[in-house]
Length: 543
Image (cartoon, rainbow, N blue to C red; front, side, top):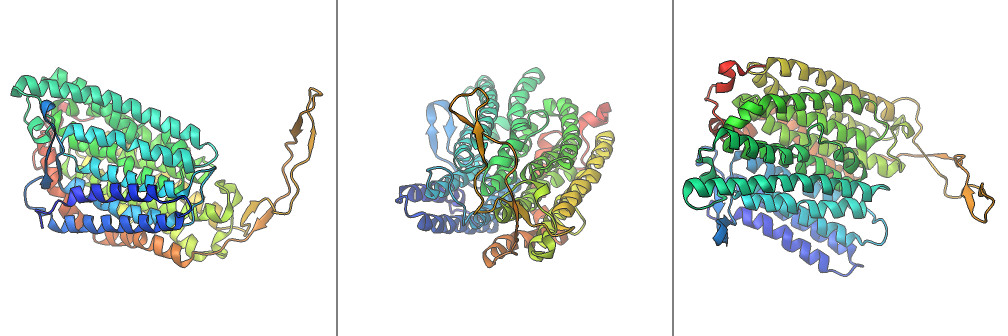
């Protein structure tokens, strides 16, 4: 089965599906969502078949395929996966059908048809697969930038009240990072041309280059800025709370579950192997940003009044743990970081889905508008609690194994950073339990929404005496709406993620076995021996 172009099929199928859905008449939104679900399930099957064809003990990159694209510049349409990329493709394959199911009754804002929503969703899936499967650096850059387009339209066309602001901010931040990375990609091509006699973007060829340490720092900075914005790391994070809060729930799940992982994936795939000396020398700076992000984002999450912004800030804190695992230069910690990437996508994806279901019932994102939901919707409350516990890495949930490996793998090389980062675990328990208590326990209040039969607020003459009127700021009368429990469709949506949270919490070894050989190869490229000792650490590089 290894000769079958699984990766190419995973890119082409959703791309073609997006074209077919976009070509449907606007009135065929129901057919469009059925096609979107069918295509996403086909991609999931392809991802599983690719995983079955992958041999963890075989070559580093497998399921490879390549075709000349721009021969004059050494650009190829080259695809291949190691264990790290493969688990990310499996994550994409799982999350997109869940998003389709969670968005089944999504309604459009403005004049846009929901057919367009499904088309952009499939186009996004195609680009997400491409960015993880690319083994040509230029091709990776193309997919890296192409992802922005469908996500921009998902946020800007189908998001909340401030969707235009959030979409533009997301696009500009990511575009800026991409342009900086483009300069580094061109610089890498120039270096390869000077050393190899011809320029290339092939990852395997670039790994063999002997780049001057000073040049390494410049190239590392170009890639790192783009990845730090995408991840995001503090202080490049400000776009995520806005985008996460205003995106439709399906878009938010993929934003924090997959798109942001491209940043941490990029650190592992490109920065460490291609610029090992610069990575080790500049690691303390990245670790400082990571630890600041863990504490800063967790503190902000505690004080949030908006459910979606709270989940977005928790993700920023989690990305700090992933960066800690990567730049601790330990095989154990880096394995934990990769598992964290997958498990965070599952746990936070589940949390966002449940938050979306709660918001769909109450019509409000404000935490204060809810209370006592568990007494009327116990299933919804139970899944909310499980998602929250997985987010804070409770033992028995999938995230615990990831966080545990990151901390025990990081401590020998980076004890100070690791100890400070553990404070974030306490803060995680605080913000998760607080939001659960405020929304699910206490006297039942449902959610306050304006009654349908209430008259609009009274108006008064404008202060300047003109003919215009000004709406009074006094709040309109409000009533308490009931909260129903999870429907069969919603149970079908959350069940796969709930099962993965528990299954990977108790049986993580299959995932570890798939990832560990690729992590060991990456750490070897970065100058880390099998025992996980970095030369920089052995020469006084500890914090």
